[in-house]
Image (cartoon, rainbow, N blue to C red):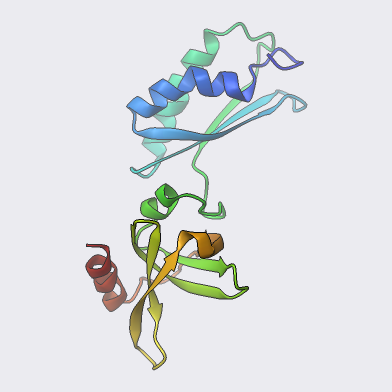
Amino acid sequence: MTSRGLPSPSQVIELLAGEFARAGYEIEDVTIAANMRPPRITVVADGDIPLDLDAVAELSRVASELLDTVEVAASEYVLEVSSPGVERPLTTEKHFLRNRGRKVEIDLTDGSTITGRIAGINSGVLSLVVRGLKPHQLAIRELAFADITKAVVQVEFSPPNQRELELVTEAGA
């Protein structure tokens, strides 16, 4: 228990992980903000199935029921269940797989940056659909995960080029 009678992040994970896994999600992070009034417990979950509002509502209900079984000295707290959000850096192969088809900006160990659309992963190698040297030219570029220092999904406001999506499918097959 934390100093204010709230469970620790590891206790929350231990308590909720099984139910979240049965629903198809992993707990990526738990934060406890005991200094807020009322205190806040935030659970960040991710899965192969996107975390939509219905899933958030169900996971919140289950988490609340399970947390209510624990002796929590703080009788009132706010529970928040959310997805990692697009600003979260992609750090594992699983993160990249879950974002297949999305545009990412990747910083490499040589100091360069590349932007492309995630096509697939095979044996520690990431395949990206990137712009070619000529206008409207597309190519597949492969990057070793060891060469990636940071990767973040880019927010797109218009639909992707159809040919890019076709290459994502071809390269990921």
